[in-house]
Image 1: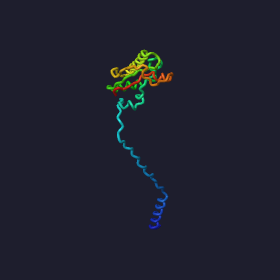
Image 2: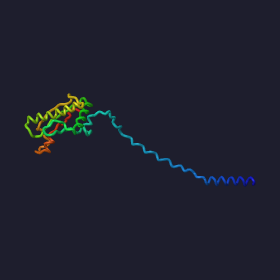
Image 3: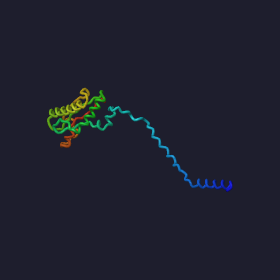
Image 4: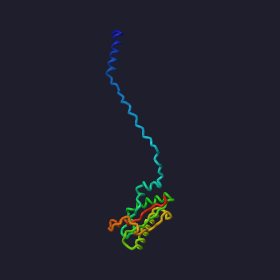
Amino acid sequence: MNKTVRVALVALLCVGAAACTKKEVKPPPPPPAPEAPVAQTPPPVSNGKYTPADLDTDACLRQRVVYFDFNKTEIKPEFQQIIACHAKYLQDRPTARMRLEGNTDERGTREYNLGLGERRADAVSSALQAAGGSASQISVISYGKEKPVCREHNEACWSKNRRVDIVYTAQ
């Protein structure tokens, strides 16, 4: 074979071989990730301590009533967590002050109910101190049956009046 035929044959084979090979298809690059929204203000850095704002925002600290059974001064187990939260607040805020207001239902004499309200408030005060609160931050007062939240004459209403209210006088 002459030289031109060989060159033509080689060229034809190269073109044919190139036409049969698969071309690798590269996938298109992924779209750029959306940028995270820029926060206008950075989240507050929490050091684990309560602040005065937590009195209105923290679910545990917003609960400021401890209820009692008839003629009892023992704190029910369901109120232990509330007491623990308020004791921690007192620990975290040494300038905070609270008043514990003891109340009773309408049954019994005025003198008996004043004493019972005070014993209930004292029980809450002792529990707060046992959980880490300071006695110097807590004051106790008894209103007995003088400040009811419900004025009906039935057990459902009386149970609402057997309570100690936690009132912050300084945050």
